[in-house]
Length: 120
Image (spheres, rainbow, N blue to C red):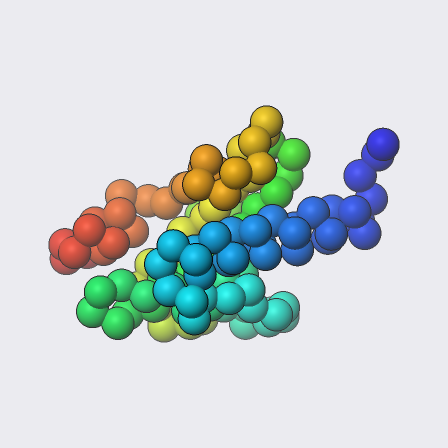
């Protein structure tokens, strides 16, 4: 079956919901899927915070196992800026598994340092 714009949107929505529900279960029940934000998008999942209360933007991508790290990480960083968040992180669909804890996470080392509590 060929992927259309509608099926791609459905896959993206389903993946965002999968990740948001998993994080809400294992981290904080206030984590939820965000609605579309237009040109000032602030990421796909809301309610993710560091221990000090700063926000983290999560951008979810389901491209059938294909990875466009540079483009996606830049998008997550722009959305983190839109949200005044500490970091922007991409969660990418891993081909061959639907388990949320087995999906890929993409970020720069600067974002990793922030998440681990260091200074950027």
